[in-house]
Length: 394
Image (cartoon, one colour):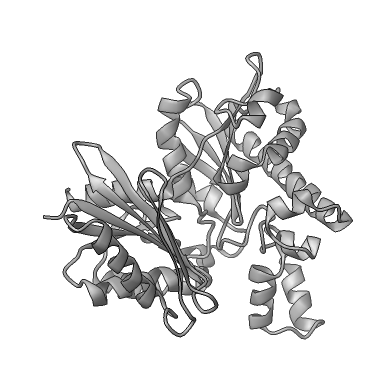
């Protein structure tokens, strides 16, 4: 039996990985973390050890490392050279969509792969690459058990009324419903709050997962109650390259009056909208904050507006707000965005502590704030490793 768990998170042009050592009961120590990015353009392997030191920084031509399978081979070569005595016990994967069928982590079988492939139209930018990583491991190490951990699973606790769209009920029965995403991140935050902020762990909490992909989730007593994302990962907040919530009539207009094809609209909604589309500069919040372009300012203002609007709605669903938690790339690193959001949320009882906010907390609201505000780093990879360990009985 091996004593390590490999966690893989495959994107369209990247393969992120983490390796965890299985210690005593409940102990998982991160040994290495990294990614191969630029697949299809400029492949680049970057990795760090447990102490933060660089253990790999290698580039290839596009033809040398062009697929997730080749990227996995290079990751495996690195891990064998660095951790010669470490044997893998299993591999855990982030799989974005579990559809209406899967509400918990799943041991991968041929039947499961067939089912997961049917969800590709629901997450076209993510699901195919998640499954490609699973197939790559199957080809390289067919004896290794693999576990799929779903971004939708944490939200399967939503009441039926929350999942519905106002379409004929038969469409709900066919699986057209609000699923919610970023569930592994929210599940990690919910599991961490009893340690980091026990005073709010059982309360009415809104978590803002703000990154290139962005969403918000209402959590009560550690359980997901509602989420800004719906049927696909296009819904809800403005994101790096995605528009978030919009009138579906726009799609009809683009089809009928702009002459756009379904594929062209998909490209527009997934890759050319959001912060990138509004600013005309890029989708990196750091770049936009440093820019003096009026459109960059406009994109940031709209980003904050959409967060504030969603926060009000989720607070209403919860019947009030005890705490707001920021996480993910922008949420953890942008004191400016946190300040803007908290200022807009004064009506909910949040009184920002400016100094604590600049230091990224963890608590960034004043001692007398009626509703508190926090910064809690997420760790989806550790959440996947935990699920993999439990499911494989390690």
